Image (cartoon, rainbow, N blue to C red; front, side, top):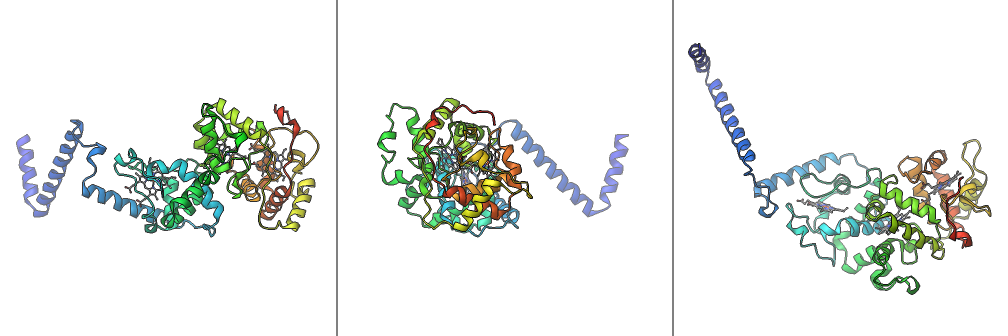
Length: 399
Ligand code: HEC
Ligand code: HEC
Ligand code: HEC
């Protein structure tokens, strides 16, 4: 039986050289596969980072990466404002939080531990020119598999990814002084810039945390006058705490703030909210003259809303008014216009998230035109942020 089967098989095979060749190849592949499986099952494949890659593996992986990034970033539109200083500040602030550990930065050596990874994260300044901006965007947004290069923590926030790209593009020419100035602000020039009355003793566990917040939000909670970071000083305590918790849980999307808030426990978040709420209010000071017509239009819209568009009045919830408002409604007076406009855009696109009250803002923002958002942002930015003596009692009231 078996014999006749084999005989017939060899007859069939003998018929053509091509068939014999194909069988030979198939047999070799089968043996290679079986060999690889045996090696893997026996635990003999080298997975140690300490042994590095063979040159051919390294070449193949990098070649795949270059081709994949190039193809998959096709069609990504590069924004025109990548030279905007506010974007560069925001990108630099995040680079210090999220990238420095692996890649190092001008004046900041690479971590010896990160250098033991395979593949080793490169020092980036000399690499940037190899990539187009949309390719950098793709890399920072998606990360790279089989390397430790992580994806962006909040995939809804492309605006933040572009901020990092804006920063990366400045990197090749960046001096250590410039890096410190961008990523640390006043602390770069003066490490004691956390003003004396705010200076906390070393034993205070909040000290190092506040020093980190101050890199971006400024030692006075005034957002460093860059427009990249919101003013926190004089904000409602209940809103601050709820927002920090929303970042920590991911219900407010920001690749910049989520990793920071998620790393702190609720008790520390509570202390931070209390600290910033009681700081003397700061009002954004824009060098440029405010657009008075925009302010006037914004003022009217904020006061009476727009009936035909079903836009509610804003002052009912955000002031300015004498009435006691729900402390979960943030103070907008004196905030940076660009920050306010960005938040309205994010609400309208359904990409901001926030506290349990955030839903209220989605419908309000969706009905606004981009011009109206700008007018409203200009109006609220033009207001002085008031000292509110009732700040002590911050229990949220029902709306
Ligand atoms: C945990 C370590 C780690 C962190 C954190 C990290 N990276 Fe990477 N990154 C890597 C590794 C590893 C590679 C791949 C290196 C290679 O090409 O072999 C890489 C590659 C890159 C590349 C491509 C470089 C090139 O030319 O090959 C860029 C650009 C980059 N990272 C930017 C960033 C930015 C921006 C951040 C912060 C948002 C960041 N990385 C955070 C480890 C990290
Ligand atoms: C790397 C820069 C950076 C650091 C460090 C940083 N922040 Fe932020 N923070 C931002 C940015 C950018 C935003 C705006 C994010 C957004 O679009 O939602 C923000 C937003 C916030 C908000 C929401 C404000 C509002 O009006 O809704 C709070 C609260 C806040 N940060 C508190 C803190 C605290 C407390 C710390 C220190 C533990 C800190 N931040 C550290 C950059 C930073
Ligand atoms: C019914 C109350 C209510 C009305 C009306 C309202 N808001 Fe809000 N607004 C809120 C609440 C609550 C939040 C906080 C959302 C969150 O983060 O969870 C908020 C947040 C915002 C923010 C983000 C602030 C920050 O620091 O991130 C902006 C900007 C804003 N509102 C603008 C407006 C404008 C402009 C209008 C009028 C068109 C308006 N709001 C109408 C309740 C309201």
